[in-house]
Length: 227
Image (tube, rainbow, N blue to C red):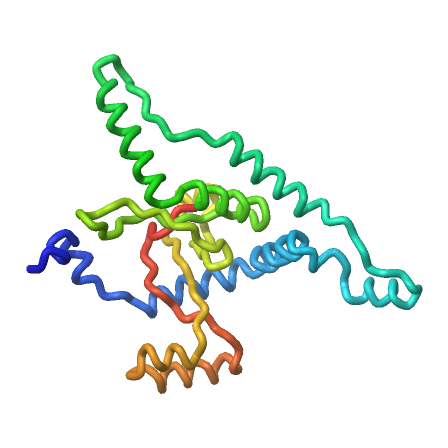
């Protein structure tokens, strides 16, 4: 056993992705949450200054000789709130439950700050705040990565439009979700190049969806992501 594999649990080394099940999970989310997905796109368009006038409204204004101008107060307010979050942010700190736990609290504080420092938590936290204010959901991935001297904690910012979850989940923190995961877009030619033995299946699936871009399922396990 090499040093790199010795630090990885045996169940992780033997992991085999069940792509059929992951695709069902994503399809269930895409089908049952279509209205929510559309609403998130509308909110994103308002922030990006592309959804304030409809094509029909803009056409009527042009006929009257008026320019379809607007003052994007939505983006201004969201950027302001992200700045407030950044100014109010404090370094994580552990507190002892009893006087005898003061040393343990110091160790916990050092561990949390180390995890934040190596993962650029300032950037990750601000990204999650921004996505939460624009689309309603802010997401980060929490896991373990292989560092120079051993396993290290990993916290990565995740685009909220790549996040999917159990459509039956009702809690705002997704604590009751049976699964959460990510779906990634990939060009059909890149997919064929990466998996040449699956090129024929990829082409068949591409034709079935009418040639439109379609998300290929990636590895996704229950509790892979934290909302």
